[in-house]
Image (cartoon, rainbow, N blue to C red):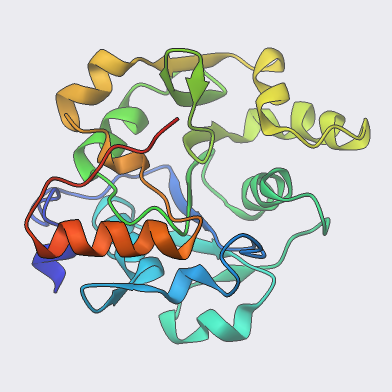
Amino acid sequence: VMSDVSRDSDPRVSRCKGIAGIILAGGKSSRYGRNKAFEEIRGVPLIERVVATMGLVFERIILITNTPDEYAYLRLPMYEDKIKGLGPLGGLYTGLEAISPEAGFFVACDMPCLSGPFVRHMVGIRADHDAVVPRIGRMFEPLHAVYSKSAIDPLKAIIDSGIRQILELFSRLRVRYVEEETIRAFDPDLRCFLNVNRPEDLARITEESRLGAKWPRKII
């Protein structure tokens, strides 16, 4: 199973220091109808696929969740949202407040096809920036991104102003965008951004995986 989950990562490569891996699992899965983090692809829950790859990249991983009992078996440090009801903004704020390193790589729990080498690349180019964010055309991947603790004050200001869109944060940060050409050098089919919002997404991914097809690109 591990070779399937982490086929893009080499365990012989040392893990990143000075940065934490942060998995956001606080969503209500309202479009899915149940907690999608525990839905399986080839027998492995989505959350375990994410944890497996993150564990090869980072020395410290934490989980942001408002239902910690469900995830206790993973034996990861867990934190509940400091401010409830904010969605991804709340997870980002909680994660940055919780970690001791100066930065964290944030990822959603329903992104089962992470590329370890690409995550390492993002971590490696974060110097002098508040965030490192993938960008494809005019679309962004804010929940597959690096954020520094220097983003806490601008983030809190946005929260206090009533804004709930994470993209509104970027105009207040020094952001390094990773463009499509660079992303495709690590992940030609952009499969690392694939996520599961509905049962039909999971069924399609599972079937294509079973047939040995390339993982589909997320439509963004």
